[in-house]
Length: 227
Image (cartoon, rainbow, N blue to C red):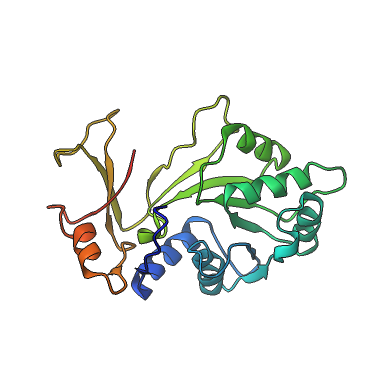
């Protein structure tokens, strides 16, 4: 987000904490077929690859050449019998636009997960209407935690209110702090702080940035976005 690359060190323990949670939370199993839409250097791929492996599920790489063509993407998802789709919202939107075309149903799809950017409420509403009966959930977290919170969207948004980031995943604690470091109350804006099994080890070859990010908080959390 700053334009300056930084190497985030996520450990096996960090990834496993998320993987174990996701397999249980979403009931992943041997009959599932997970899309692999994100590039493998993007943290969304942790679920695509490792949650699938942990569950004994299949991984279906999505060809880059069709990723942004609604007709081809919907046909691919149907042909490959994809059951779980995970991507940025803009890609979900492309898939949903394709599914909305006549004869482009994706009958095997049971779960759509999205992360990485804000899902415009009107586009989320259109996606849920195009895919009735499919579960939708927002997964949230900075790269430094992969995923730290989630929210299941139970009904299409009725207005333009943004989708909540939700509550902490297992083995994770979240709170918001005021500028003075005290814990913010309900309804207040504060800096999100994350503590738990998914928080990174630090930044590669950058001990100063690591120290600033991981140690200034007396409660031992990782500071993040304003919420």
